[in-house]
Length: 358
Length: 136
Ligand code: SF4
Ligand code: SF4
Image 1 (cartoon, rainbow over the protein chains, first blue to last red):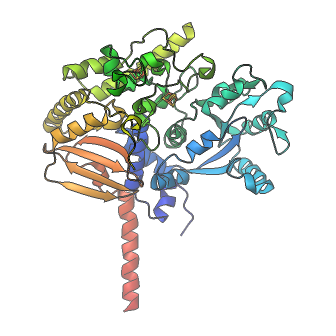
Image 2: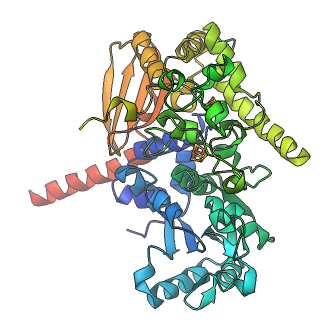
Image 3: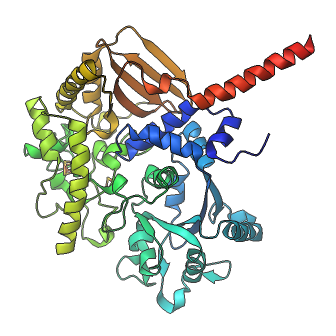
C-alpha cells in the first residue's frame, strides 16, 4: 500500500475513525467559540490536510509555555494533535540531543522552506547585542532572525514572546522585547498569557491546518477565536456584577457566596482571553471560579500595572449585560448562543477602537 | 482526602442561564419540527455555571434512547424527553468533559458512519473473507 499522504489516511492506518476527528473538532470549535456546525467542516478539512511542520524556539523565559502546551489535552486527544503537527524541533524537549537536534532542525528547515510555522517562546534581549540570552553559541536575536527568514508564519506564545513579559518588567535590565518588535516582514500571531491557554496554542495551529489560512487577529495580533471576548464577557459571576453584589475581601460573606471579585482587583473587564469558557487544567476551573480575580496576564504590561488587588478605575459595559439581563428575566428573545457569537465580533472591533484612542 | 471548605473552589450558583437556553431550544425545536432545519448549541461556550447545566439537564430529562461511544475516551449521547432534542457529552481520556452540546436533529451527526470509514471497513472485511477462503 502507498504511503499515507494526508492526515486522514495516516490516522485511518492507525485505526482512528472519523468519529474521533469529529469529537476532537467539536472540542476545538467549542474552545474557539466557532459555531458548532464548523466542527464538521474542520474535521473534513483536517482529514485532507498534510501534517504541519513546527519549529519551536525558546528564548528568555521560564518554559511554562512548553509545559502548558504539552498538557494541552488528555492522553487520547493529545495523541490526535501530535498527529496533525510534526514538532520537528523544540529546544526544551530536545535539549539532551545536542547537535543531533540542531541537525534535525536544519533538515526540517530545508525540507519545509517557506512552509513551517515558527513558534517563539520567550522575550528577546536587545541590549549589548543580545548577549543575555544565547543557545549553542548563538544569541536569541540571531537565532530568531535566521529561522524567521524561511517561516510561513510566526506564532509568539506567552506574554514574554508577545509583549516582553516578566523579562521586560521595570527596569528591564536586558532590554527585552516581544517578537514583533524585531520581525516585521512575516505574519505574526500573538498568543499571550502567563502561561497561554494550551488550547489556544494547539487550536490556532489546527485552525491554520483546517482552513488553510491564518485566523483573524485583533489589534494586538491575537486570534479573535480565543481573544475576541473579555474574561468579564463570559464570566459566570457577571450577574452579580450587574446587580452590584461585590466581595469586599477574600473572606467576607460576598466571597463565600461567589459574588463578583471586581472590588478585590479582578482585571476581567479589561482582559481579553478565553479562560472563562475554555478554563484550565482540562476544563475544570479558572482563577475566578477558584475565588481569585483575573490578573490580566494576556494584556501588555500586566506585570507593571501597579497591584493585582487594586480595582480597575471604571466599569466597562459589554455583551454580558445583554446575557445577564435575559437570564434574570428568564426569557430570551432569539438565540442566546448566536447573540454571544455576534457580540464577540463586535466587542473585538470596539476593543480595537478603544485601545487606539488611548 | 477532601479539602477544608475554605479551600474548595466556590460552588458556582444558579444564574438563570438555563431558562434562557431552554427558551432557545424550544424555539429551535419548533423550527426543526416545521422545516427540518437542524441546530447545534454549544453549552460550554455559554457563560453557564455547573449548576445551570445540571438544572438544564434535569429539566430536559432522559428519553427513549441512550448511546455510548468509545472513541478517544467515552461519549454519552441521549435523546431528552423531547423528541429531536439530543444531549451530546464528549468525555476525554481522563474522564473530564471535553465538549457538551445540544443537537436538535433526528440523529446526531457523530453517530453516522463516515463514508471513508465505511470504505476502509469494506476493504478490511474483503481481506478477511479472502483469507478465510484461502485457508479452506
Ligand atoms: S469583574 Fe471579574 S469576577 Fe466580576 S464579573 Fe467581571 S470577570 Fe467576573
Ligand atoms: S483569568 Fe486572567 S490572569 Fe488568569 S490566566 Fe486567565 S487571563 Fe490570565
